[in-house]
Every structure is written in C-alpha cells, then in structure tokens.
Image 1: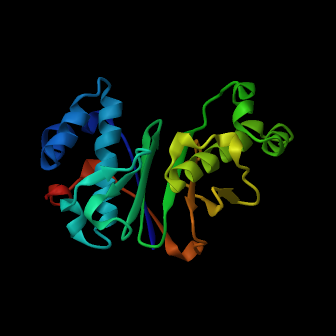
Image 2: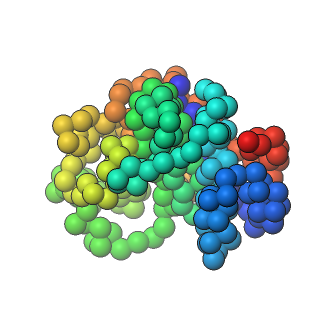
Length: 225
C-alpha cells in the first residue's frame, strides 16, 4: 500500500504543537525545527515528521525509534531498515504531505498554484513539454502539472537537483531517469494545489490511500516514542 497523509498548518495551533508535540521528538530534530525564523516553516517541518510517523505506523511502530539518515544526494531514509519502507515529504503554501509505502521507491511533490512568469521556467522543460504547456487552454495549470511530475521523479530516483529537470521528459505519465522507469499519478488534495507521486513500479489506484490529518486534534500518543 501507499499511504498519503496531508495536513494544513495553522497559526492558532502552533504554540501547542511547539510546546507539547515537538518535545516528544529527537533532540536533533527539535533543534532543526526551532532554528526556523518563520512559524510556518517550523510547523511544516514538524507536521512532516508527525505525518511520517502516522504513515509508518501502518507497517510497524519500530520506525519511530529508527534514526533517519540521508544519502549523498540528501534523500532521507531509515538507516537500519533501508529498503523495507520508503517515504518522501513535500510542502508548499499551507499544506504538508507525506507518502509512505513498502512497495517501491517513491517521490512526492506538491505546489501551490501561484501566478508566475512562465517564460522563466522554459529552460527547465523539454521542447515537447513546453509546446504542450504553451498550447494548453490553461497554461498555468499545465505548467504545474509538469512541474510537480518532474519534481516527484527526481525525488523518487533519489538524486534530486543533481538530475536536471530538462534532462528527461514526462510522457503519458511516465518518465525515464538513468534507465529507470518512473510512473506518475496525480494526487487530489486541494483545488489550489497540484500534487503528484512518482514510483519506480506501476501501482494500482486501489493501492493508494489518502487521508487528511487534523493537527488540532493531535493525540500526544501519536508521537510518543
């Protein structure tokens, strides 16, 4: 299964989260969250970790006790249990989303659909993608569709920005990076956002479960380690 949890940040709930929920997490992570100047960034980071624990609980609570490590490309993974459960986190605007699965490598990307200068992003797209974007009835929506797909792919392959977005093309919800196939699916969370997952195995819609997590109703047992 692929479990996808998402949550909205809230300033009204921030003080309680920082004073109570954060203290249940590893010291190094607490320091990271406290280092953010903006409450929004701190809460997005904190909720991302909480959603990760929520997701891994579907498999085994042992993952709460395993240190998260990072590859040379800065992709997070469970150090002692690498290859058993895969996860990826993304945030934009007021939403943070986490995908957790035991099926395959996974990448997820979400973007708030802001008004932008599309021409600034032409160098990131292949010629074929750009033709489709500029020829679309809703150019902005088409752009974010490609952007989140490509971002999800480079996160799924584990190399992140080391893979130039223009170096591969998204075609019919698939992409190939370093001779590896990735399959893309849109995740519907909010009309103001665009979100996609990328997996290195083809998965059925029935294998994806999406749940909204209300942080205002957070149970402290959820993050007790």
